[in-house]
Image (cartoon, rainbow, N blue to C red; front, side, top):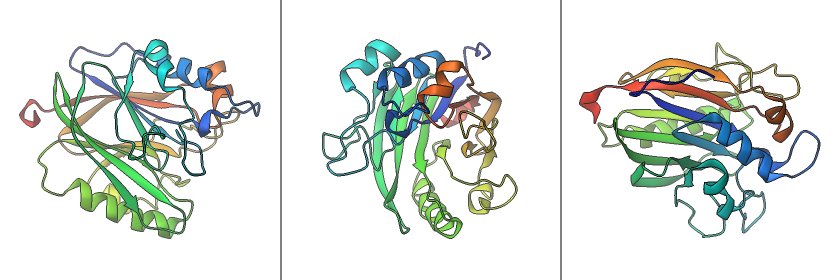
Length: 240
């Protein structure tokens, strides 16, 4: 993984599968160690909470900062989950959240997204953390709903990061592609034998992708069935 420049922002996305590893062991400390190795400013997580109500967090909250140097944005509506519909966002302590919204997304399965407006040294950034559904016709509806929220009354540069659950790199995400540049830094699923780029990062035209990749360490291959992806970006100063 490259060392990023001083004006660059590193965004990572990681489906942690509720801390269940490819060895069928639930060991959240492995997830936290993988996150610490990302050296990211913002880490968007999927499946960060357990499946059934009250959906408790899959990660020990009191160990996040000591093991990763990051803090979880306080977006949970119930105080038990780490995020919303399993979506959570970790940031460096110097990054502050200006505003956020938890969004329900349409579809057969319960799905949602988090929109967070963040104040960074480089300027203000809107980040959307999302985990789309398994069926393409649901994903299209979910993207329409997400884009409606993203474009609502904001001139802030925005990025979307998450598990988009789309196996094709050519079709299926047209609604998002019409407004954002979508990047698949590499194959991130399945962690044991990566064959699909399910995890992606999308940037609007005020953000520039510098570099990106997939973390394929031995620990990452065991910690979850997805590998984390990362991208270094720059934003226009006028968007601050």
